[in-house]
Length: 288
Ligand code: FE
Ligand code: FE
Image (cartoon, rainbow, N blue to C red):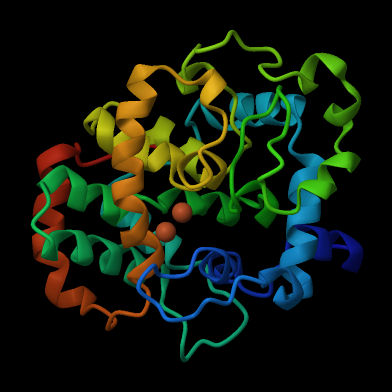
């Protein structure tokens, strides 16, 4: 049955999933770019604003726990990594089919940029798969529960989180226990013990956690956590291991954010190299 128009707008406020990432680029332009344009607030597309309103309103502790129960049993599908890439590629956005990269092209472009810089094979593979969690969109999850900057739930929201004002509509805003510096967590407990807002990072981490080194897993799990890796927030929850792994997340971030202007990769030509790389780390099929 077709959605009510209102419900459809709530699920897909972004015309194109990449508009979230374009907005990231406005906020965090390439360091070497001449543009000193920082007033992204005035230039944000209405869909992006609405997207963050929904995200900040609905990402509660209870919501995150319910998504863990729903998805972390990984009982939806059994498929190989390449198959998952092709599956993700069936996610078609509405706007600009001529200029937008496909999902596989973004993944390969990220991996190719990492490869060009001579990084280890696990790092290249991490680039190749880092967004596979976006298949959540194909299972009916609304955009605001798949993409967007992530942040800890169950403790005070950092004021550096973009569109912080929208948290006033989050039911957790009125739960005093959730609004202290550490909230439901012990100081220094480590990010492993912190509930992050639900999205493609956390989901994919659980799918691949048995197969990659911890540095790659941290890149996957926290690559959208701009409040932590870009803004330096939430150190009160972190331990020494997090600090060490965050250096890797920061090393990964430019490849994700700034490789999009690169030439589109030749997927078919590169496929054998990447299939070998996948086979080195993953069994033929894994649970999703
Ligand atoms: Fe991502
Ligand atoms: Fe990405």
